[in-house]
Length: 143
Image (cartoon, rainbow, N blue to C red; front, side, top):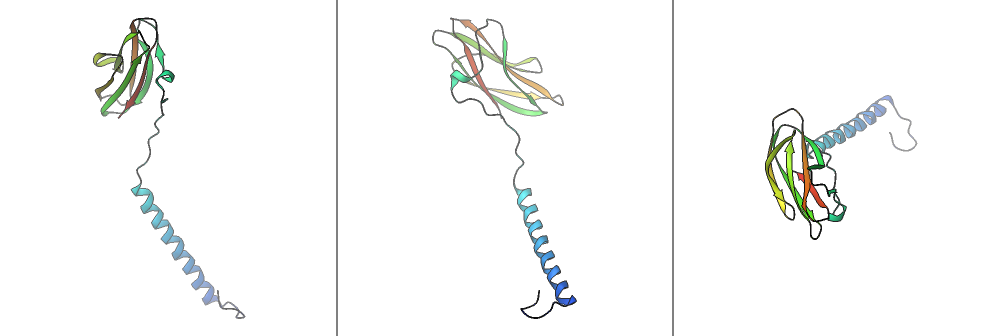
C-alpha cells in the first residue's frame, strides 16, 4: 500500500503481499514451537471429592466399582477405600482379571504397583463388605 493520494503500482502491491506473507509465516512458526512445547493432555475423568459420592457396595462378594483401560508399562494405582461407621471391608486391584498385590482393608489409602504387558489391559478396583451393614466405597487413581 502506498501513501495517500498515490496510486498503487504493481511493485508496491507485490511488496505488500510479501510483507503479509512474512508475518503469517512468523506466526505459524511461533505457534508450532508453542504447541510442541506443551504436552498433549490425556483425558482423565475426575472423581467425586466427597467419599459418600464414591461408588460403593454392600455385597459380601467381590464387586467391580471402578475400572479403566491401561496401555503397556508400569503404573501405580492409588486406592482410597472407606467404610461406613460400623462396617468393615476389603478392596483389591485386578489387571485383566488377575489380582495385583494383596487384598487391603478399607479405611486407608493404598498404593499398588501394576505392570501392564498386554496391548490394552483392563484395570479394575473391587470391594466387598466383610462386616456390618453399611457400604464400602472406593476412589482410585492410575498414575
